[in-house]
Amino acid sequence: MTTIKPPVITIDGPSGSGKGTISQLLASKLGFHYLDSGALYRLVAMAAQRHGVALDNVEALAVLAAHMDVAFEMDAEGGSPKVVLETENVSDLIRSEEVGAQASRVAALPEVRNALLQRQKAFAQQPGLVADGRDMGTIIFPDAEVKIFLTASAGARAERRHKQLITKGESGNLRDLVEKVESRDKRDRTRAVAPLLPAEDAVTVDSTALNIAEALEAVLTVVAQRLKI
Image (cartoon, rainbow, N blue to C red):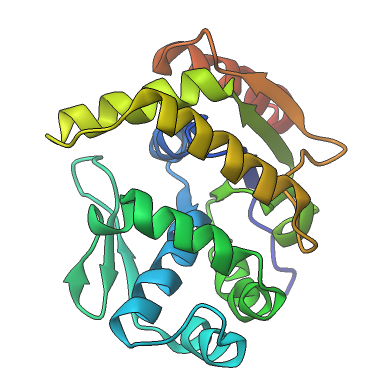
């Protein structure tokens, strides 16, 4: 019996480009599964912190990545998926600046990336998958039917993060956030393993001057053209 391969849409891009929000909205609209690959690396960083595993202990981090108890629970009402680590809802905790910085270091380790490879591939199930990350279209799903590279200027991404922090009742210096964004971009682009760059056949969408609805519409246009829907 022939197995029909589920369609895969990859949305890669730097932190703050809006790829998480757009990917979730797109998955919900299409009725597809959703993979937040960035959350997996944040979960490894958080699990390492909780279990006393140093970020330079590569072997222990790889074991942790392969065996950590995690789950993504979809919201029945269409809200953001709940991220669960060892039975605890850590959806908000993994989005802190500290965990994000640690995740960027963890993601540069080939041993950790290899440990998470099959976990990510397993998300590709019928009726389809929207995969959000930094190497979805280049490494994890190189044969994806649709590849989007969603980007925005460092200033725009820092402003978005600043607004998020204020909404959460936290403080943040905009200039410092711009420096952090630029520093992370450089680290992600220049890492030896799976650097952040668009796949050769990806369509680049710049969201700097777009609101969420406009960015989603731009992505949907590409998806409709590629999937013929």
